[in-house]
Image 1: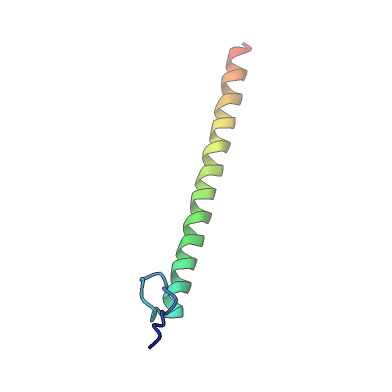
Image 2: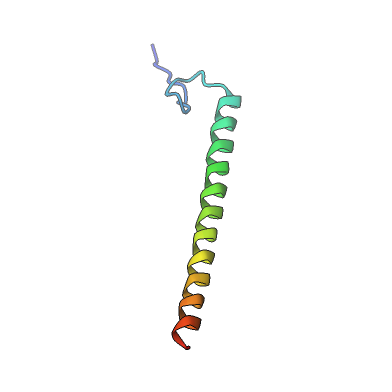
Length: 59
């Protein structure tokens, strides 16, 4: 008799539903976008602060 194994999904079982995998992918994508936006905002704030320091130092 031959053993057959199902392909494991996110939950480790073979019966994982496709909708749960899509929710996981959507969640990871959303978090990646938010973290990227926060990082860009922090970088922009750092550039503005550096510019202000240079302007104050020139007077």
